[in-house]
Structures are given as C-alpha cells and as structure tokens.
Length: 131
Image (tube, rainbow, N blue to C red):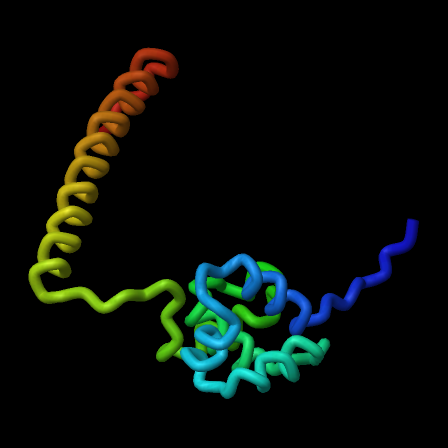
C-alpha cells in the first residue's frame, strides 16, 4: 500500500454537491453571484479557488472544508460567509436566545448534580475530603 496523497478535484466535488441540491444549477450559480454558464467552467477546474467554492457553499448550505481541510483557514477568515444562515426577525431571535439560555441552565444544573455526586464518590471511595 502506498501513502500517496490523492488530489480531489474541487470542481468535481462542487458538481456532486450541486447535483444533490433542491436548487437548479442556474439558481445556484446566480445566487453565488455567477452567470449560469460560469458554473460549468468552475466544475471543470480541479484547483477552483477556495473563495469561489465558499460562495457556492453559502448558497448550497455546505461547508466544503469537510472535503478540503485546508479551506477551514479561509472559511474562518472570511466572516461574511455564513453557511446555512437564514435571516431571522427580532422576535425569532428572542425565542432562539431564550431556547439556548434554557438549555444552558438545564445543562448547568445537570453538571452541578454530577459534580456533587463525583465529589461524594471520591470521598467515599478514596477517603478524600475537600478542605
């Protein structure tokens, strides 16, 4: 067995992901800011720039850094690209905030109970006492 690094074509991966989308190729290209025929030029490029791939990723709600780990650096540097983000109203944001706040409090309570049980177990099994 050889340890050769296989180069995956970025264009081919884009094409495979685009084919699974509910959007048409024309919609994908236009929402990414390209003309319809440009998409077909992009999928032929093995070394399609990460910036281009990220623009398609935003439209397709797909993070291509799963396939191309090097892209993760680009993804985090480019803050204006939000994968799968949808615009929410103020009321929706308030509901979402409350949902996460409640989840935090529930998990915090569980953590506190587990922590207490853990310390009791340590005291019982090891004879340790906190001082």
